[in-house]
Length: 500
Image 1 (cartoon, rainbow, N blue to C red):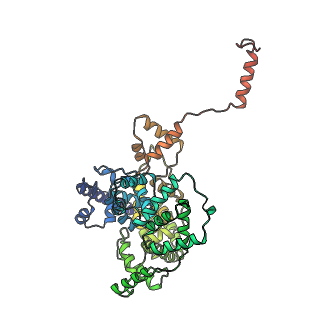
Image 2: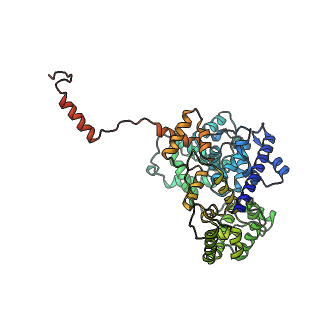
Image 3: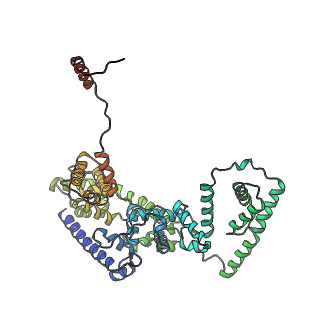
């Protein structure tokens, strides 16, 4: 056990030195013109993958000021395009650790990066964005130039549609009853002819303007509703589109070399996936390269790898659970500690498999958070163990964590939650916050002292709720009886006004 602790201490010390080195080089490579670090130079100097460098970067040691871009209009086009390109490395949803990496890469606050990432995944028109586009319209800028300044949406057509939809929804006053507007057969036939003559791929705006001029007596919302109904009712492909597809096929050849994403995984695909993952460091797997090799999405590769690990490892671990537990019990009874290297040699499994299979837990310590006496050494040990053995996309096995730390499993859950910034606001913690706040300490400094990932907003909210003055508390029955007794005793002496 002492050897394991010594190895963990050496590993933590090396990680701290690497983190300080990465942070120092990142500060030296800071580009004040763009407001962010040139990570390419850092990667070349350290000869390390980008994701590993970002994971080692420590913002608390950096002297570079973090940018604040709370609104989407505050983002420059280059920054937003760089963010869209970078987040393609991640699945559809970002974890808290992924958001930290994006924040370090862009040198922007984590909450601002999360907001911009949501706009990348699902672009939507907002009031500030609408006002900015309107100001560009007033300057007679074309839609192409506006799209270059605001590359939020996937295409110019979608930017136009979102703008006009937001304008109609916000400034129309009320939605007209489109179902009450009657269209004659002649008007419907004329509308079909307009769509056939003026509509083309990406030309929805021009066709709609022609229809509005053709039917000035119809409400605007009714014309849009009729246009969408006719457009969605057409299931055939235009002749021009078919000619364009044929020209592309003739130019680029057959589709044998095209990348198709299939939902079916064969045994060869699964074996290929496992082999490709083993070629990388578990903490810095290049999922983009693996996805291109397998011709699948990054999220699909991660999800399948997680399934394969769940299917293969538990069978091997559960078969030796009794053997591992008896070996651990014997060692603990003799030495009051467990040498997992000896357990691994006697059983024939790796140390991590022994940690996952062990069911013996007598003598495990309890972990109770105390803001006055708590030290982060134990939490750092647990973090180093998780990062070494359960790097994403592998789920963390808290049974193994509990056996490694020799602490109750539920307490390991609490410690991990505290590291994620999930604080349980007990009386002792609130008293500590009030004490530090009384000394003039800022919320962000208090949050950093309580937990490394706790935000200043959570501390401020808990402090204000705790110190908020209590309004009205109804008197209890005993207090009411005392009031009645005092009134009866001093009724003749109490001042009062005559009732008329």
